[in-house]
Image (cartoon, rainbow, N blue to C red; front, side):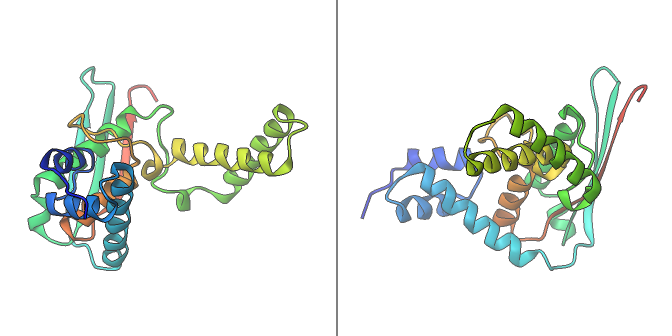
Length: 206
C-alpha cells in the first residue's frame, strides 16, 4: 500500500477544504494521485449532497455585500437544516463568497440555475450559436460542430446562472470550481442540506 505523507494530505486539504481523514483516505484509494484524489472527494461530496437534497431546510442566513465604491450591492439567501450550521464559519464564508461571485459577475448573472431560464430564451440562443458555429467551422465533421455548439451553450449557462458560474473564494485559496461544486463540497463536509435559495444584485443607475 502506498504511504501518504502529511504534507501531501495537507496540500489536498488546502485545495479542496475536505477533512484531513477524507483527504488521506482518498489519496490512499488512488495511490497518491492528486487529481484522482480530488475526483474521489468530489464524488463523495455529491453523493452526500444528493442524499441530503430532500431534507427540509428551515434555517439559514441572509448575506449582503456592498462594493467599496458604493455602486454595486448584493443580497443572497442561503438556507440549511439547523441554526448550528447557520453559525458555522465555513457556511458563512460560503455566503460571503456567493455575494462576491454575484457582485463580480460580468455580465451579471440573472438566474439561480438553468431550470429558471425561459426555454424560449435558451432555444433562441441555441439557434444563434448554431448559426455562428456552422459559419466559423464550415467543413468540419458534424460531430465536431455539435460538440462545439454544446460547449458554447455550457458557456452561456455559466454566464447566466449563478450556480454554474465560477465561485469567487473570499479566502483566495482553493482550486477553480463553480458555485454548485463549492456548495456540494460544503454539504459533503458538514453533512446538512445547504441550498442557495435566491439572490438579487443592484447596480447604480441600472
